[in-house]
Length: 212
Image 1: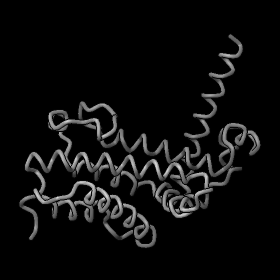
Image 2 (image 1 turned 60 degrees about the horizontal axis):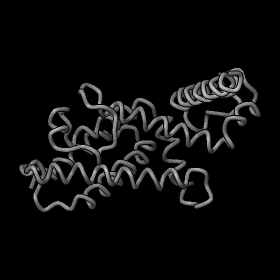
Image 3 (image 1 turned 45 degrees about the vertical axis):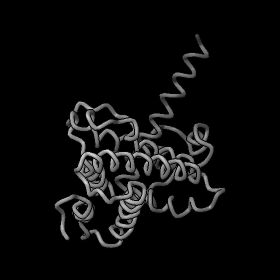
Image 4 (image 1 turned 120 degrees about the horizontal axis):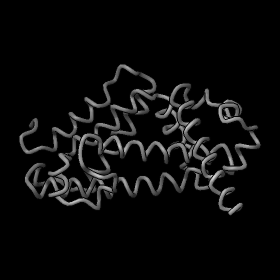
């Protein structure tokens, strides 16, 4: 019982650290989120925080995982769709939930409100090109999962006549994700760029009656 209680407390503390780190990074940015500030927010020392995470980099990777969970919830908000991977969905479920390719713009709109998390994502994505970086496996898995999910969604909508018949779902998924990542980097340098509008303009090119 004692071990079970200790484990539960450890899990709860880890979740508290993640929630605090997410909030601090969202408010202050990646550069302004020191391990010391995160530790103080949860009543621990820096060493105490690293008892739950192997390194500061691992903590930041887990913050991105938490953000991904929140983004999936944002995508599903306002519908009766449970939070799940896109590749598990069928057209009937999409219709019932009101999901279209434009639904993917919702997390982009949300991220504009938390520039610190965009900064964290862009910084770690660049650093993760090093196979030894703590975020490398996270980004490999994220890109693979996101590409598969978006490609499946494009395939369903294309076959239903809601997107152009000549589309290659995997190519569209790669382009859409690359556009989103590139726009985030540009937006960090020029916040006047309307990321959601740019994404929606691209999606309009994929629709049967979109611009020529």
